[in-house]
Length: 147
Image (cartoon, rainbow, N blue to C red; front, side):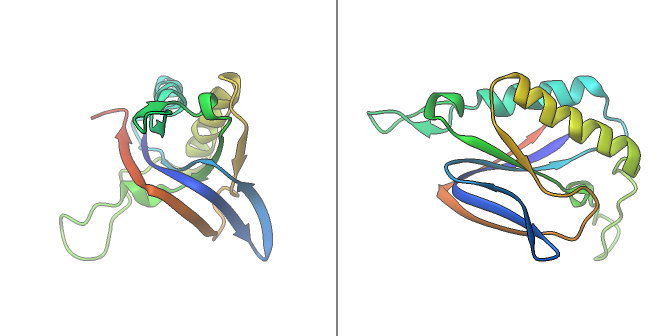
C-alpha cells in the first residue's frame, strides 16, 4: 500500500456538493492499494501513519504523533498512486488492486487507525472527490509498505 501523508491545519472532502469528511488539525492521508497488497499491509500502514512523529513539541522539534496532539485523520482512497508512466505519458493503473479488494483493504486501514485511538473521517470510495486542505509546514511524506 502507498500513502501520501500531509500534516494539515484543516482538510475536507466533498462529493456532489456534500462534505463527506472534514478535520481540523491532523493528517490528510491519500491511500492507494496495490494489486499485491494484503491485510498485513493495511495493518502496517495504519501503525506507521498513527505513530508518525511529525508534529512539533514545545522545543519546535518533530517529536509528537497524532494522538499526542489530539489530531484527527482524513483518509482518501487514491488508486492513482499506483499509476505507471514508464511507457509514455498516459498512466497505466494495472498495478492498482481491483475495486472490491481495494475497498476492503482501505476500510481495514481506517479500522486499524480507529483501533489505535484515532478519529477517522473519509471520502467516498470510487467517487470523484474534491479534496481541500491547508498543508501545515508544509510537511508531506510518501510511505510504501512494499518499499
